[in-house]
Length: 229
Image (cartoon, rainbow, N blue to C red; front, side, top):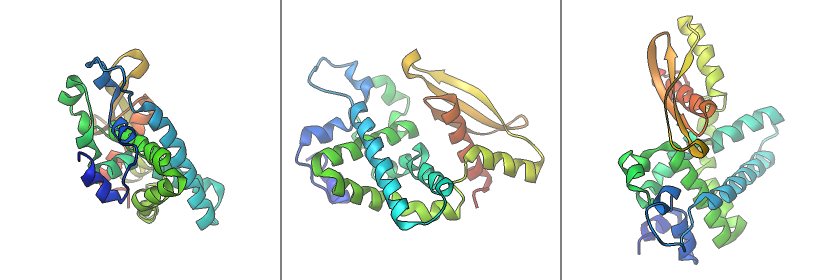
């Protein structure tokens, strides 16, 4: 069975096999086939995003007495695309994706935003197939487990603010962000932004908006410079 290895890894066996397959159908794939019975994973992603946020919020509320602002920052770090892509990579979700030839050739299986979206769709499918408690257990086991690491490495602090603070403190330079490229139709663009210190390109980030791409670029710049800790 195609997904047996994945199901064993997460210790969840899907009843609705079509729902599981739906998780991995990227919208680009449907443009190249004539099967009208298939649906892309965007609606599942929409659902999974809501389930993920609820589970993380509930966990933080029940286990920590910290102020709302701090809990909000922790939640943002747990559900942000960079973190979800990391989890998706650990689960090797990329190898199951159905992609168009163009998306495949452009490295779609390794794109962070695409992997993060797939993980959210996966959570949505678990919720529909196995209900809330199983989805909650999955999120606790594979996503929330990184909370202590996130706090220790200050990944809950807004990446752009931290990058600016560290760059000014250590180098007396204020970072700049420049558009490197944009691709896709107007309703579904992906932007690549570069994080610069002076004229030096430190890192790039991708996302459906320039702002999200800048945050990812800043996060990667912090990682590259070793400024997270």
